[in-house]
Every structure is written in structure tokens, then in C-alpha cells.
Amino acid sequence: MSYKYLKNKKLNKTIAKKRIEKLFKLAEEKAFSNKLSLADRYVELARKISMRYRVSIPREFRRKFCKNCYRYLQPGVNARVRLTSGKLVIYCRNCREFTRIPIKNRR
Ligand SMILES: [Zn+2]
Figure 1 (cartoon, rainbow, N blue to C red):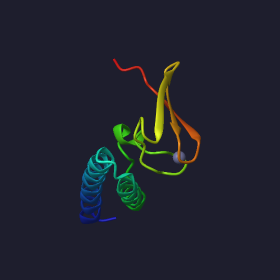
Figure 2: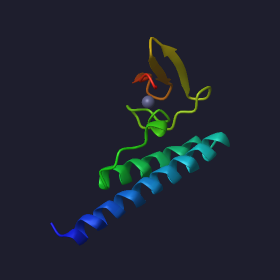
Figure 3: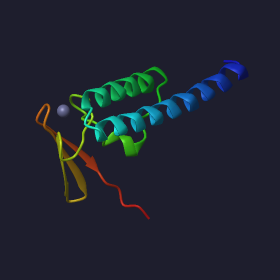
Figure 4: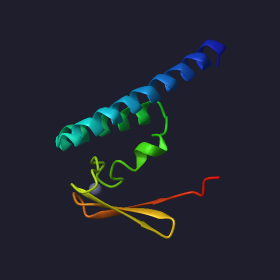
């Protein structure tokens, strides 16, 4: 593995992460104006980028879509969010599945 390759790989990951962030922001905007199908599309694109470049989706965005059907979750519209014993429980109305996200103690 050459130095140049490693450098490019790192750069690609940085770009991929920025694109993921941008896509989630767009998804948020669409969901806010009740265009959830468009928001779903942005989530799909963000997931594809994350898989292709093997970058993880940032934590703040991971709770914004369903881990089962990958649809964008808008609390009060197609999702219900509850906090139980240190876990964030998100109920998806599209596939009727619960997603549990542990909340770590932040110091
Ligand atoms: Zn779902």
C-alpha cells in the first residue's frame, strides 16, 4: 500500500462523511416540510455512501432512521420516541418495529 493510496483513502472518507452529513440535513429539511418520501431517499443515499466508503453514520443521525426499514423517522409523524432505563426506544410506524439505542453516560 503506497502512501498516496492511504492519503486518498483518508480523503475519500472525509468527503464521504461530509456528504452523509449533508444528506441527513437535506432529509431533515424534507421531513420538516412533510416530504417524508424524499427524506427516505436521502437516507438511502447516505447509507449507500457509508457502505461504499466504509464510514459509519454519525451517532446523531443514526437515531433519525429506522434500523429495520431504513425509513426516515419523524417523531410525531411516523415515529414515537421514548426514554426508558437509559435507552432511547424508537417505534417505527412504517414497519412496527422498535429500535433501541443505548445512551451512554457522558462525562
Ligand atoms: Zn421501520
